[in-house]
Amino acid sequence: MVAAVRIDQVAKRFGAIQALAGIDLEIGQGEFFGLLGPNGAGKTTLISALAGLVRLDAGRIEAMGHDVVTDYRKARRSLGVVPQELVFDPFFTVRETLQIQAGYFGIGKSTAREAWIDEILDNLDLRSRAGANMRTLSGGMKRRVLVAQALVHRPPVIVLDEPTAGVDVELRRTLWQFIRRLNRDGHTILLTTHYLDEAESLCGRIAMLKAGRVVALDTTANLLRRFSAHALRLRLADGPLPAELARRGEDKDGYWTLPLDRYEDVEAVLAQLRSAGRRIEDLEIGKPDLEDVFIRVMRGPSPAAEPRLPQSGGGGGR
Ligand code: ATP
Image 1 (cartoon, rainbow, N blue to C red):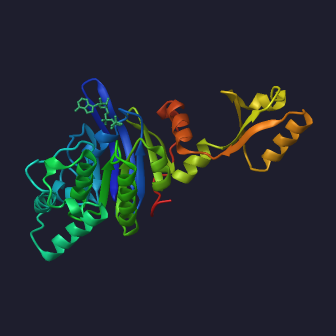
Image 2 (cartoon, rainbow, N blue to C red; image 1 turned 45 degrees about the horizontal axis):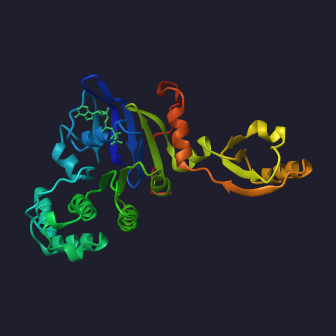
Image 3 (cartoon, rainbow, N blue to C red; image 1 turned 90 degrees about the vertical axis):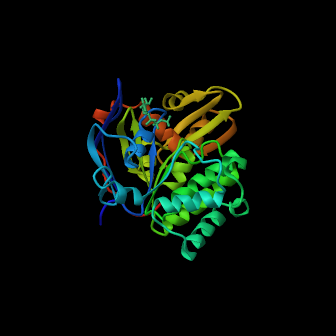
């Protein structure tokens, strides 16, 4: 099966800035794939190159087997891109905006087209605003229309560049419900976000970028296992933590954090505290999270020293 997105040795420089420094990635059809990285890591540049909006210095990119430069029209038709920035023609209504977008992809007026537009509007809670002029919409509503625009030609690959930046809880919930459904129906999703909790719950596989290079690439579950651990957080009512425990823990704001390999290790910690006569004031077990992983990866060794990790993942969200 052809890859949904294939990125091969891609490099791009803006003046003195090496925005992309040799990226290889393959995203399988049906994946829910996350592209993470700090500001300036190169995520938007990579997505723009995928959408044919940035000319590469080296390498090539294919969408559903079509080269984004030499076979631009077919590649572009395979993609629905939700950009970061809100750009609209203020003179049209929501429905007209979607009809015009469909027209760009050669989809003429038909009952099927209008039915699909209605379905998108319903799923993004936009139906009641279908006749409203674009300039009268709030920022969150405009963002919904951006998502709707990207979906109007039923692209097999949906690319979302920080779709939930600054939007309210309700839109997030609606948006992710719809995107998850589209993923279940077979659409490939490529998502960039700074909300690591979103990436953790949605993405089956994740690539982390730093200074234009891939510094981690694996399934979300493996990243959580490899870079993070369960930890016991506790605050004592009195006295210091016994030295043996303090050696392997970290003390911050009155709380000790002790890494745990297994839940059973809690028993040993409690026994040590009991025999030292310490009383516990507060205690919780923290699960590994992607934020933890992200911070470790970004602080980690230089990208060149990272081992190459498996490329293909296949199928679905977590
Ligand atoms: P963010 O999380 O802030 O959106 P990003 O990972 O998407 O960041 P990019 O927008 O791809 O990062 O930027 C990568 C680097 O390339 C940055 O240093 C940015 O300043 C630079 N850059 C991007 N576009 C241009 C441009 N058109 N001209 C000059 N430099 C650019």
